[in-house]
Length: 299
Image (cartoon, rainbow, N blue to C red; front, side, top):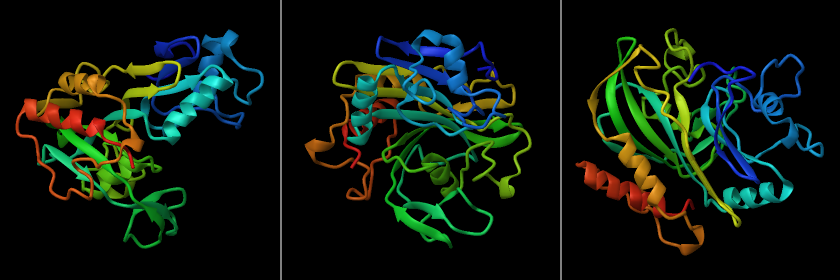
């Protein structure tokens, strides 16, 4: 995935009501600042001027958010009605999302459920950042759950790194970045929650990517899977050497899993109510586990 410019916006899903774009890293979704030379909103206006809605401030209705530094699948509604149906899916936690990341160190467990509560930091010099419960200055921490599956172990610029699949089961600000950092495995290139007080020299970007998105609206099932950007052919600094779980098999399990239904009750196999999750030992058991936790509700 090359750096973003006005002409290289990639569309991974399109219908009369929705677009799903593959957002570039280090690009804001929109901005009121005139100095922002490139935003996703400007890319969309350039590519699809006929789809811009004059009744909206930015011309397009973004159904959710991705951090400035995060790349990947982002859903855009092309009408007020479509935006409303997508909003209900997000509000009712019926959306399925999965991310890829390169994280520092070799994660020893093949599967981890991360359940640190997350709040806003009031510590000096940490404005607009989040922290886990128990951190000095952590305000109003809320329960947060992330599932992590290790895909590969390898080296990034000579340092040990793991490639992981992440699924946020709650939607806290910076959740994946905070949870990975709290486990001692910050995302490679994360200047806010990364190692050594934010000094990240080699990565050209933060290695977090929204891989898969499914929004089951009342009128259509919006589903998109973006290409994997963390492969040696695209970044020579990344050198995997040990396969733990094949990514294509996990993607297939996500695709065939029914949509989450928060109204059905029950609990996730890896929720706090089930404190001793079974760690998958084989590819088959990992796929079964993934299928099960994608079935479970987000609350």
